[in-house]
Image (cartoon, rainbow, N blue to C red):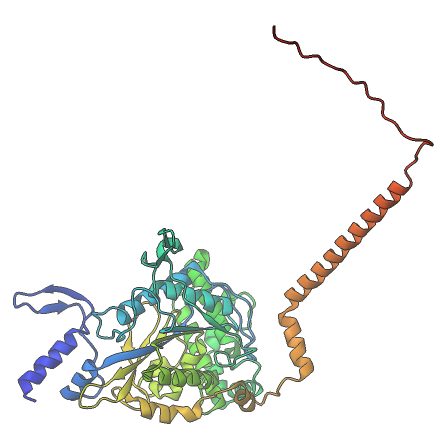
Length: 493
């Protein structure tokens, strides 16, 4: 291909990636506030870049973290957690993410438009949503709903015409109700595999006992002494680093008095030690290591969904997995992203997202490739991150080959990896009874109320019967004396 033609095609392809156009200059060229993309550390040849830009998107998997929430506590040893609630800020953050995803993947003018997907009204056969329902469950669910409101906003075309020719538009100006699958850890361990996992708890204990952790604990003492007056009795230890950060960050966001009194750089230091803590807990040197369990169960969902999207007979084109921060850490370690981006050794901001795009290559290479992108919070934009040592899109077949042996595919395998015992019949019945305690109490209460009503009715009937039997009657026939008055109607003469 002649160089001038190749350069023209490449320039045309790159122009489609520019998001912030300002105006045309005198020569008719677009001026942009930012470069169209960031080149990797090494130089890619122009033909490889051209192929990347000309590929079309067949489908996308989005892994999104929940938005802002109220105060929250995690046990540093077991990661059992307290209740929490979402905030209006968190809903706005997730809604903004949904709007960005819509402009990226449902806008026909976008270079990442999903080929053939319906963008005006949701087609439930093309879109699937899975929501983590364990710890932080209500917050994750609310975040998913807010994201979907931005991704598929109300549309007045969401309407039906009745037999009497009346047109009915869905509430709230055509609100779109997207089905959501909540994933309960008691039934499915794919989105919360780290709780109630003995081997993972042993991994945490080993991390706390390591020489590196003990050294870092000594280095962190000046910070813990400084922050002690701002956490109000909470343990100021490296083991509790995540809870310290979460408290300080929550107060800094929602408590004006606290925000005015917090010394400078204290929140940055708190985040640094929390990042170290969470990175050590939710990672492992081996892709199959127990520390990566949050990513290992997630990989199964990713792989099976990619196979569905790649299969022409399956309508699925968009999968949203709304979850918490833990899988982000594990997946970035498992796929080698942190090797090139050490700044990602830690937990992401609220409303962060990983986008895994399945793309069909351009001729002559028509294979399917994966492009992985990451967006850290609402203030950042999606950036390409390359997995398994690649510096461009990775072939789908290679990604599956490298990842499939690390995936945990069932609850049975999860129990084997965790060293957890299968629940006995009695334990299962106890769990079932606990999960349905409210329904059971309601049933018992209804039973007693119904029984009481029936008993009252029978008693009332019996008393009335006895009252009739006890009524006194006089001897002889009873007669009713009635005076009859006859009125003669006057006649007309």
